[in-house]
Image (cartoon, rainbow, N blue to C red):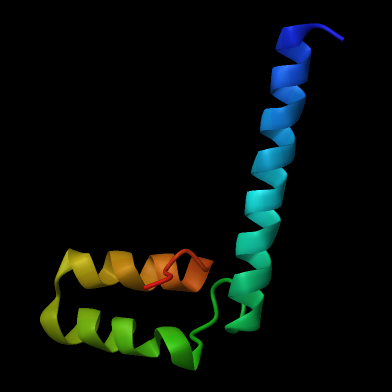
Length: 68
């Protein structure tokens, strides 16, 4: 196996692990696109303030990328 092919295989494996981990985390909170109770606060804050910052936090939360 060439070094380039080994690099691509490793990168694909790491990407798959990261994606599946994020999907599992999001499904534990209510799934992609669902308005779970955990993320509801961000949506309310975004709707009340109209700030893009809170919409971004809400989108990351729904996708399972918001860990803080």
